[in-house]
Length: 327
Image 1 (cartoon, rainbow, N blue to C red):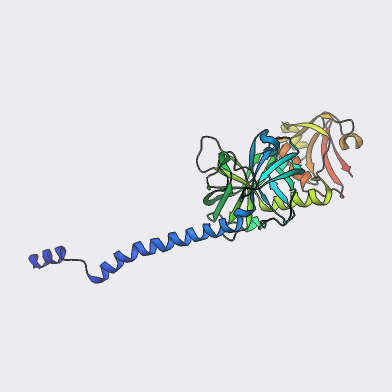
Image 2: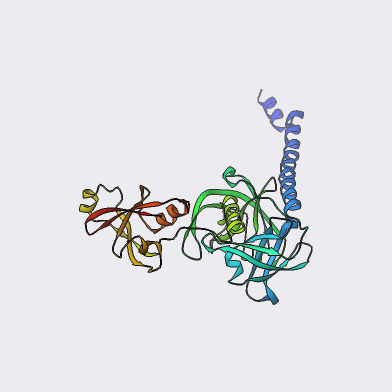
């Protein structure tokens, strides 16, 4: 019995075991090929619409961008424009086309350009709200000036927040792991269907795989605002403000649910706050019955409020609670 057991252990694998071992590499190759085919499809769809953006005569920095219409409208980051109004756009075919700034939204780090050409290949904006964590995404751009560079990764997280160059909080940011570098800024983040779901905007220095993109829905809103109104419309109170703590007795007296609020430090003499009687020292605790705990809350609530509707500020002034409507 023992010798029989030894013979079985030393014998060659059965046919079924051999077949399983042979099947594993083939399955791996098939999976790899499917992944590769998805990336190749994206690149073939989008690459012709991706551009390299730089200042006239090479002045200033450079970055990436992508066309969103056949008549030359293109998206890039606001920080790529560097305060300039004229640019050179280099296409995937190597053509150099003059471009000008149509409008910008520093708060979302977005800029809209117009190339002096027509009948250009362009990309389509997808619905970023349909993204799922773990989904394949592809980044295309000009990292370190190397045009038409492709990298792939996954959606790592959704709903992140980062600071724009003007200090405003940009929300609903896409975090992904498709490697990007300086020069990728303004380039598209694309899903497996070839739809642009984001605009690459930032990386975390000294980290790996921490990359961020502005969601496609925000991009669509910014473009519509600039095209239809010439600028991105946002309500501005015309105040200088800072976050401050609310004394415990004031929380109890006025039935407040937050330990902090926003104090008005200064008022613009030509702003809406001045016109409606807001004063330095006022403590803003609510806007439209929504709690205000910090300056970011004010930006968020004002951005969500249409220009043509009044907003109601609830504030504390000299130990009394007031409501002021701003039209």
